[in-house]
Figure 1 (cartoon, rainbow, N blue to C red):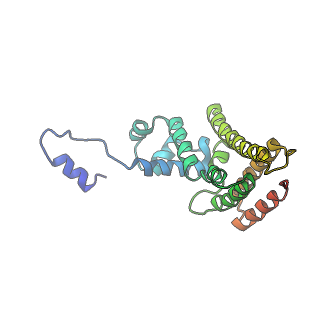
Figure 2 (figure 1 turned 90 degrees about the vertical axis):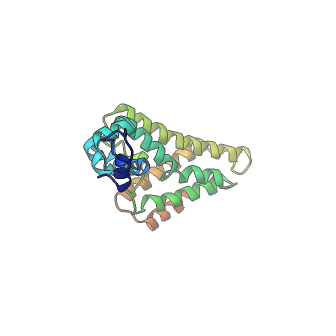
Figure 3 (figure 1 turned 180 degrees about the vertical axis):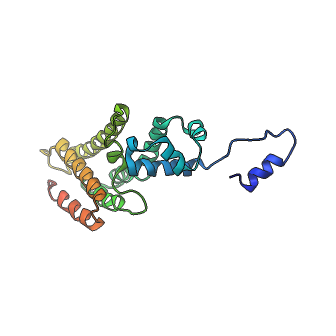
Length: 210
């Protein structure tokens, strides 16, 4: 449906092309696509599902975002910079790896159980039952990059003497990744925020002391 501004724009002035494609808010449409992929996964979300939730026609979708795969790539970038940004922010802003990971887990408990959007982590769940190897690789690389960032932060603290020299940075980072992924699945299964916060506290109890 055209807005009043669209009607005025079409009628105001000779030589104006009639039948101009309907405009839409790109950021809003992208967020709606994000929520659909987050809830249902890449494979189960069809182009017709996307046009329905985004409120646009297929020609507008293809013109603005490319095909479904290109749209999903953009959705992943948006998710990583918004809903999924809490982990990197915690590692960057806290003074030690221990404090950064503890904050990351606390915020995961809050984010993954937030009822204003689908539960869990989109990067973890969007590839479930996916038969597209490129999409699987994209999300796997994102998850592995997150673990690598955690390991790098832990190694920095070992070198700085904030963690014991014998700390296994790779194993500790992998443990954190496993906890995050488990919290995400448990949130999808209905776990409450306080239950995941309790899990986060137990996970931090294994950390070595300097």
